[in-house]
Image (cartoon, rainbow, N blue to C red; front, side, top):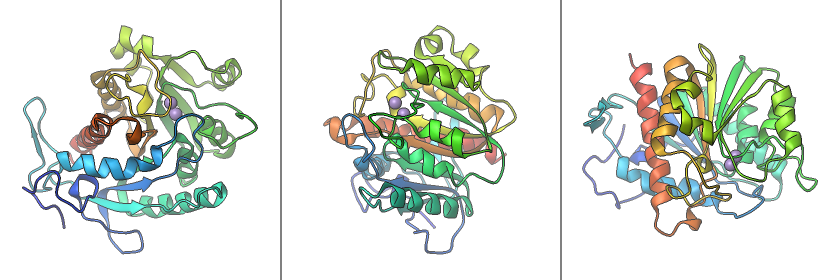
Length: 310
Ligand code: MN
Ligand code: MN
């Protein structure tokens, strides 16, 4: 299976990393599969994350690789050689019927988990993380959330399932969720109640300023020897690097800082799932944001595969 190696970046049809498209209705297994969750009806500010799976597919053609060859990276050597990657398509949202949309997402996440070692969910706004996590009920696990925002509000404007609340609902619903480490926090709009509630529950909350001061010290705050789900909100990155997001905040992480943290996670733990959310490609006409997001997924897959294929 796989890839039209040597084809130009802009030739289609577009799939994630030009991997074969294999819908969940078919029977297959792989090391990694990416599933699009084009749902952004829970955004409180600027919409557009519904366009992210499609934009990342197109951008990721830049990082297409043949499984027999992998990438050659002069800094890190050969990467991703031998990894079987699949594009599992998108979940169709039911628009305003959020419970039905969430049900479809959970069902697809369960199906994906049953056939790949590493499922990768491409949102969508951050509300999609809750229905994805509902597929993780089998064993205890931890979450590492990279985000400018806490997303731990009890409610916003009377809404309890917006992209401000997925982790509040997750700790209420999921007995297997052991703890959350949230890194990259900053900005002027955080709810003091949410911050206190997360602290009281023992969550580890780390500011973007703390990452800039000493990223190695922050890596020591990550879980160790655990099953870890990574939730990557692209607004953790600096908006000069990634402006295409609903709620950008200045003083964000550099690409290298974010990658160092992800490396810390996969070095120390078993990675059981990843999501990348809140990319709004319509808010960045240069296309840079989608390229950066695609590159981040390629780098994260390579970091994981370096360890998983040993
Ligand atoms: Mn978020
Ligand atoms: Mn955010």
